[in-house]
Length: 416
Image (cartoon, rainbow, N blue to C red):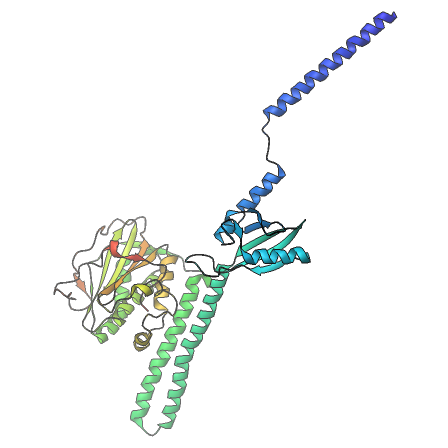
């Protein structure tokens, strides 16, 4: 091959290579433009900070905010775009010492439904920057306070009858030669021992309902049977107190649940109504089906509950009227048990009350899917009675509980 031909061939090859390179490069450029660009590492980090469940602040060496998330504002660590003074001071100490530290960032004045206990950790990031990460420990603090109160209350409630029994036993020994005194003290010992036994029984029941023990298997329960059994338990106490309990007619309603627990809950509501009603006043029970729930309402014309106490009366051992509660011999656990029985059945307990007028406690349990009977509105006048007809102030018969629109849903139980 001649020299000119060789040169021409080499030149053609070079041109072809350049053309191929150009086409490949153009193809890659076009492909990169068509492929969506992902977020950078910095953008991902910022997203992480802003979506964190912890309150996060990043401060510079002067204590100025560089970055923070919405959670930090919810916890009260940032106001008017300025970091909490305690966080800034801790950040200064970390910059100087280079060692992470913890700081209490709890609100100085607790807001309603706001955080109560906030603990932050301050760590150095270098170059004078620090990060403050804060967690809300309010729930743990509340649980610990509840635990302490519960232990204190249980200790007090157990100590009272135990101490009384010991003193009364000594009195019996001293009066051994006096039969009348022995009988009198013996009756008191019986009352205190009964109270002690009831308290222990209710503590065990409450422990089971709160998850310490597996609940029994749920079965189809006839509500009319529950009402009859609850009336049977409370009839003697009602007669002794001069209280007439009226009921509406049988409903034919049923729920899926545990009959023993439901009877216990309704008995507690009836016991509560009898204990806090004056002699001769009426108590009524009504049943109805409303929006897929079986409602069993217990209405009394008793002393009522102040609105300030209505959110707390379902708490364990809480008593709105402590002096009267001691007189009735209640344990302070009955309505807490009602609340947990309702919750474990997927229902709730509602309360309407007015001081001097009376109260209505409504146990609401989801109806059994195959229930076909039952009323869907307020029941008619009471027809069956656990005693004589219960008159209202107007002299008629109790026909229905307080209307549902006036009832208040609570997170707990009822009267102490």
